[in-house]
Amino acid sequence: MLATTTDSDPFKRRTAIEAIGKLPQDAKLTQVVLSALSDSSGYVARTAMEISGRWKLAEAHERIASRLKDADPLTRAACLRALTSIGIEGDVEPVLNMFRRDPNRDVRAAAGWCLRALAGQDTWSDVFDAFHIDSMPRHRRFACELAVRFDGRSKLAEIDSLTRDADGHVRGAAEGALSSLSDS
Image (cartoon, rainbow, N blue to C red; front, side, top):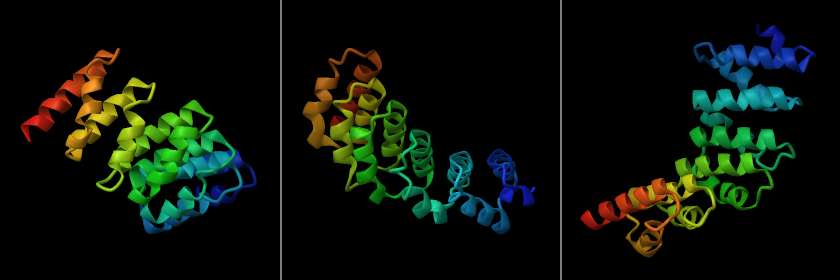
């Protein structure tokens, strides 16, 4: 199987990397997956990104983050999914830019999940500001979650406006956030 990771056929390489991802992680397999992140085939690199996220390979972070501006939206989305597991708070700014500006809807959705996972004490407010006005109800719910997680009493007016949202799940999340923040 390891020999197949260097085969000339990218589909064979991708299949080999995918099979490696199902094995117990060890140092040798980790190095194979890390090498595959730089593969010339997007299929192979994206599979390696998925495994890196699943295995929580912190050492893959820089290689994955460097491909956030890849021309292929499938690769950008795979980067974001991996960073959801291995990203750092410093990734929030570029991911937030993707959330706001990427032309691909699937990439923007993946950026939303990633931001939800990566927001920290220093960045949650910027993420909240983007989420609470987003057209996707899931992101408005995420805004409420972030406010509760980071004691967002400074965002009470924005949360209150979400209690009148068209989406019932958003209204429920906003009401729960208000209740939680007023109890603390």
